[in-house]
Image 1 (tube, rainbow, N blue to C red):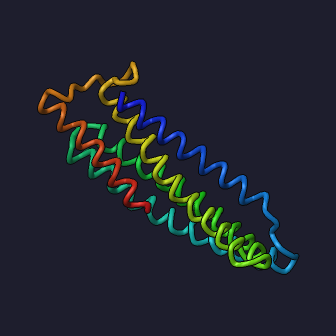
Image 2 (cartoon, rainbow, N blue to C red):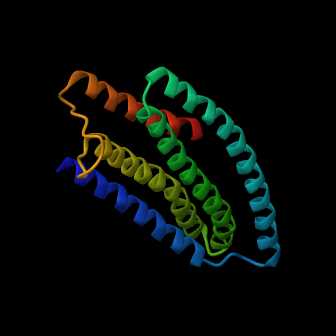
Length: 182
């Protein structure tokens, strides 16, 4: 029961984040000069993310190899990769939305402080919702695969001590992967 509740909460969080993105993107993006500045900021943000993700990718490969050697299994390295990919996706989408929301927040502020704050709050909520939603989905589904809770997978038994250790190590590695990117 808790498994499906957590999965549903993650899905709802991602859906609500997506709806917030749609709402933000429908808002007016200002005049030509504002859009030009936003495009320049977007270009800089893309360059930053590209460089950051390349560097983190190199470190990530080293960590995956180290995890495979240390744990002598594939579950921990795969958990690390899942966490890193989901965290990277949340960060990438969050950065894209933030840049787009900045110009829309500026435009909304022309109508008053309240409108600007509403737009800024929506923008900030997107990253939070995606981080939490993707984390819940990733953890729950990977746990489900490790324990066969979803009907297929490894079938590790949480009541068997060494298998419990594998499950915990794999989920901690997932969190470690997410932390590396965040």
